[in-house]
Length: 102
Image (tube, one colour):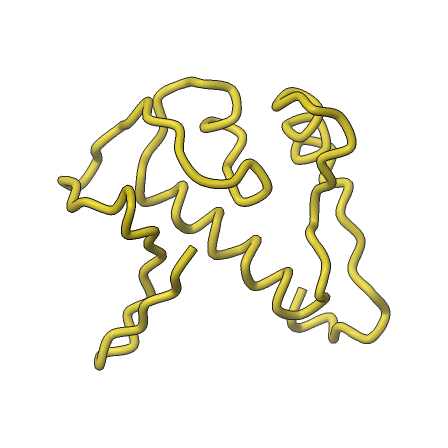
């Protein structure tokens, strides 16, 4: 995953192997990238809003940047196990992360 920041401070996530422009309100079924950064919709294989999925991935990236760990563990080799953790919000914030950052 690449984090792109424009001169106007617009943040975009990209993986140049899969990146392509999409119209607003475009729903995709394409699955690519890492499960650890994927939204529940992507992992469940249902159509997903590409922009909302990017925001989810950015949230995961911010969590990793602040904690040096992934919010959801790939404890089982299934997408449904990760989706279950996401729905239960099973991530834990370390004590050193300020409440305002959470």
